[in-house]
Image: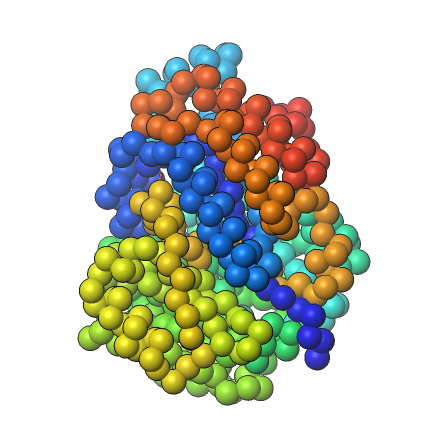
Length: 453
Ligand code: SUG
């Protein structure tokens, strides 16, 4: 197989309206931090610092732009009329939760932007994308239309990139993208096996009801995962569908990437990640050409509560040229004794390729339940595919410097929920995004650039 395939991590640039609105049911950090004052500038700079650290360490790094917020078009569609100022003022008075939802900067968590299949695994030899419908929450349901335009603008070359329609935005096809998908392979340039993790089955009528979480919603359905695999042309021998443990969902594991992470042949996971642990591993082993390297963390070492509180499993696991791997963990892992001890004694000292740990401070995002792995969309690309990208989206020194200066020019350092109705914030955001789309060379992707609002 070809050796020039690299995984490019496309991080979401945090948008100027980053705030804490307590919008995400089942996401403990979001539910506990709603109402806090956020610092959008610091959030964006933390994200850029993570991208720069990984670029400096030799990992290809990409960037995806934030979305247009507040989404005044969504408010208008819901019956708010008049000038922008009037729409904002009425929404703030009559439906403050709605205003918060249309201001969310949640597109920063690009692990939920789409599911991606590398060209190596697709029958037509193209890289396949399906933007996630994110229909399980209103603030995230607002993302896919712009996400689809952004992905189509960057991965524009139709000979190399294929874009599929968003799945029907109905609970039966609830799709949260790559956060519930892991590709396992001997190496990025070898054929892969795709692990899709779902929280519930939608079409189970007439049969015994399946096991489902009781406290919090299951965001991904089996039917959605199957449809994505079908769109991308994967055969049975390339895909495994595994149910997430309902107890994990009820403990705040709203996506699989909060409880497991895979890379190459390694699957790092908590013992309560999957409903059928043994069956999941067996199905993977049956399909993989190379031996699977499971790295299992028992509940005895890290409780579900500590896993959710530290986001240990929301780490990025990255391949190094010598075959070793680096685990990029959020700073919160150092703050929990059991977790930090497990990192040292179990992960680094264990018989597995994980040889190094990098700690990144993404606290602004973490308070909304988004760790290092949430902030990035993994796209395995060959050298030709990397060269075929449109726009200026691969990070280098000068792009990093320009994006940092752009954030410093346009972002506020303080944003409380009551600031969201400020019409100046909406104007500032449009100015910033217009400049950004020119800086990235991606053309018109935002509603305000397309003659919408
Ligand atoms: O969908 N939080 C996001 C966090 C997404 C994390 N992504 C992954 N695990 N891949 C969510 O729950 C909170 C927004 C607020 O409360 O203001 C939020 O949407």
